[in-house]
Length: 303
Image 1: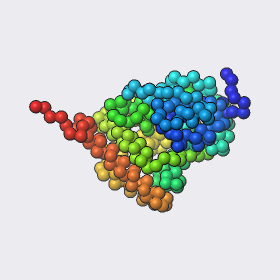
Image 2: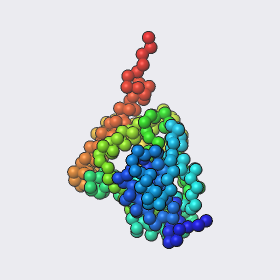
Image 3: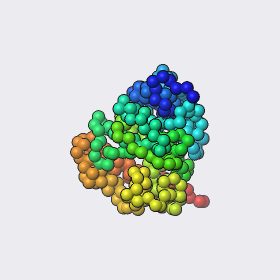
Image 4: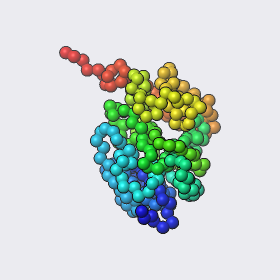
């Protein structure tokens, strides 16, 4: 197995579609990696060209409309030349100090993966409160030991070809890195709203599965999860409770902006809280549509 000189033996997987604004900064931050794959979805902009200019290997993904989605497909099919893989979205950056930590972490034979803490920027400000920080994600792992969970959301239309909020299910033990990765989207609010409109389709299907006993797969099916479990299990435990609460849009605003001190992040924190409340309302309406109207805005009538 041949590595580039002075590079860290990690293969980076970057899922992409129409990301010409974000991709240069992302790929520049990935320069220490031995190998970079950009898995593109037939972008209509310069995404593939930019990726090639930065020395990344560009692979086109053609979504069948069913599982697996982009990242799991890539984990199953790409010829990684390194044992360790790092998942990075186009609007994320890996600072040099985090690369130094990664270089040391992958030498530990006792661990098969690591959680990275993500620092989210919105309207030019770090969203430090409201429950957005810390934001742990399992992104670095031995690629033979981890895959994204299948939550059986194939029936949800218009969710895109990339995993939404599925988590990596890891075989073995994971550790935690201390240096933050950065989430900085250079695109405008249109893209944030468009993305969350798609995400709400996925969330509504996940909630529907939870309420109808169709949640056996992935971490949703782990009924041993508790509040004191790890970060992923804690999120799933809370989701099981959350879906059964009334007034979720209002509760989400109160939880983010007041109880978790989102107001300390100024105008950006207030806007983020309002948008999350709107997002929760979209999920609730689409869940109602699934439950009462068979997934249609207006039910078909038999003549």
